[in-house]
Length: 209
Image (cartoon, rainbow, N blue to C red; front, top):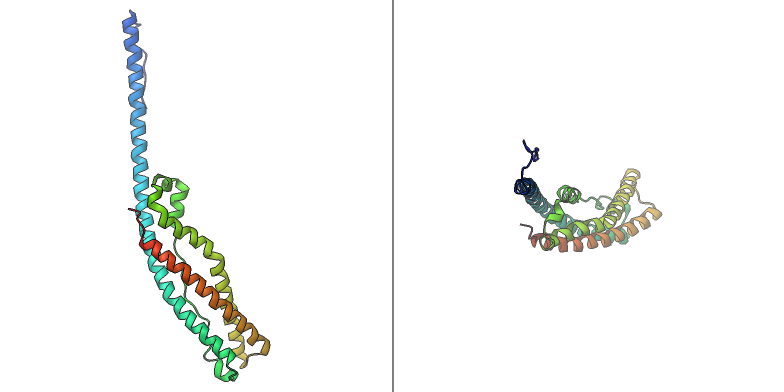
């Protein structure tokens, strides 16, 4: 901060007075300029750190999405098999050991993106550089309800299956519910997989450098 001290002696002429005023104004201009320069450099550092953190998070999320795609494809095949078994008319003893509603999806990370939004550093990055990343994070949030319903279908079916295995048979009403849950989970699996495929392309095209 610039300290402005009064002159040690009063100005004797108008020339001395204006020189004194000019000195004060120049000092203030220099002080403000230095403050703005420090602030600008601070913003540049924040933007650089935000880029680095988001890029690392994007790379991690790309790996997660690709692993999830493999599990979604595997789950889709198993669900199709479950549907065929439930519709086959085979005995409970034959179908129970083959039914499977396990899945292994992982949630993507968003801490770096959220932090950059909260502290304002995201606004310091040109919009042309964050388009693909922004699509990923927004579409992930929009997809959460479908993911939650998929998890609910699979977990409910797994609970019914565990009960059937415990008693050694599938009640007619439980079989019908398993059929409905299986078909529902297949549709949601396909929806999530399609969205994830688009998200993978978006992250692969990420140009946040």
